[in-house]
Length: 310
View 1 (cartoon, rainbow, N blue to C red):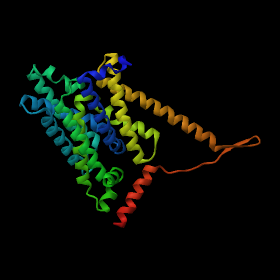
View 2 (cartoon, rainbow, N blue to C red):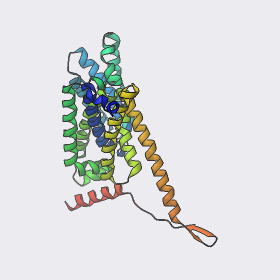
View 3 (cartoon, one colour):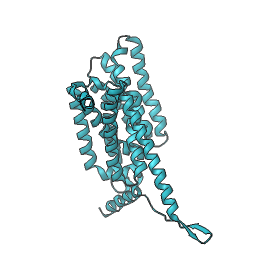
View 4 (cartoon, helix red, strand yellow):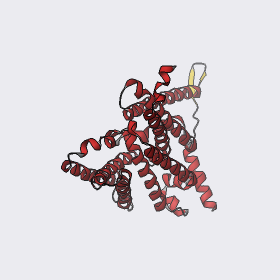
């Protein structure tokens, strides 16, 4: 028992564990909307833009979070403007804007050789170097994101499925899109110190996709995603201590393991359901179809109905 509790005696592990749990919950919460909007690539792109901002901010002696935040949010706004008229697809806009900002950071690094070691944490994560100030910032972003998404639940849900219909029913989709971009950017920035630029996309997508394997209800999917994110962070951090490997990579690998288990569970459930649908009458075997609609679509329709009444 003493051996299992050993890591909890160290302050750096306590800080890292709290940070991993908070970021896991944050990524799980906002990742659901990222997945349902088909924006899986955006987390990866914004992390590159934020890295470019962090590099430029470091040279200008600006706080890491401020530099990364300004550039990340600017990139998100530019992407929204480019895709507004739908002449430029979102994946193309993300690729152009975020890689350009990342390239700016690489150019700065090539001129400032002493930056390489200083920015390793942003590239690969440095969860064991989390300070009290980092924890406060991560906590504030997590709480604010949870509160905003709670009070904007229905508009965000509606905008995620059908922006054109949302506009018809009076929802300010541009404002919702800007709000979501802000929350996503903040989430990406605080996650950079945990898993690094290279694995932020996985931290955002894995909890949500795993939850999607387990349920078709949007509200339940959000709850599962947050719980899975917390389990990813806690178990990945705990395992990395005993295996003496990079914490960020271990968190992502643990998430991949949970996802594989969820896929296995879904396949088993589908096979069981398929067998129940088959009936035998003598030598004749036939099946009865049992059509159903996903609860996610149902929740979207309920939002539409409520908006119509209003």
